Image (cartoon, rainbow, N blue to C red; front, side, top):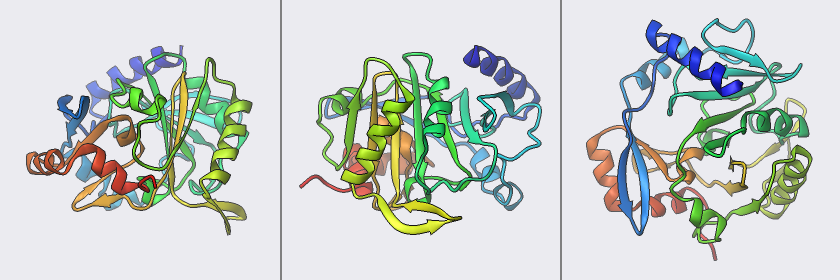
Length: 264
C-alpha cells in the first residue's frame, strides 16, 4: 500500500513539476566483476542547495500536499523526497526534531521497517555531514534499486571496516539490538550530547529485507567527489562526465574504502 501510494504521488508530482529528480538514467560500469550503477546529476542539484531551499527544514509540519504520503505512526511520517536520487524516493521522518547524529532508537527502526515491504527496497541512513547527510532532522530513506555490491556485503568481501547482520525476516527489536552491538564494537558512541541526546561519530546504515550493514565513516569527499550511504550499495552520483572518468580511473571500491576505514 505504501509504495502504491508513493507511485501515484510521484506521477502527480512529476507532472506538476513539484518533483525535481537529481539524477539521469542509470549507467552501468563493470569493475572487478561488479556492475556498478552511476547517475549523472541534473541541474536540480543547484536548486536543492540554493539558500532558499537549504535554509529550511522540510521535515516539519505542515507538509505540502505533494510531499506527504502517510503517517507511519504518531511520531513518524513518510514523505516523498522532492529531490529524489531514484524515482520514487521516500523519507521516514521524525515529526519532532531529533538530531541526525544522535543514537537511533527502537522507534526509529519500527517506523523505518514499515517501508521495507519488497525485496528490491533499500533503506539507508546517513548519520551526519561526514556520512552524507544534508539535513540534520532525523530521517531514514527508502528507494527501490538493484544492489550491485550485495554479494560482497553478505559474503564478507568488503575491504573496509563494517559490520553486517543477515536476517530471514525483519524484526525492529532485533535490528535495534544488533545496531547497539555494532555501535559499541565499531566504537561509534561518544560522551558528547546534542540536544541532550548522546551523539555518535559519522556512519551509514544500509538495510534490506535480508541484511543490515553498518559502516563507520572517516570523511565524505575524495578529490571533488562527495558520497553518502547509497554509494555503499554500489550506486554512485557524479556531477559530470569528467568526474565519472576520474571515478572509473580511481576505482569505485577504492573510493568507498577511502570514505571509511580500511580493514587491518
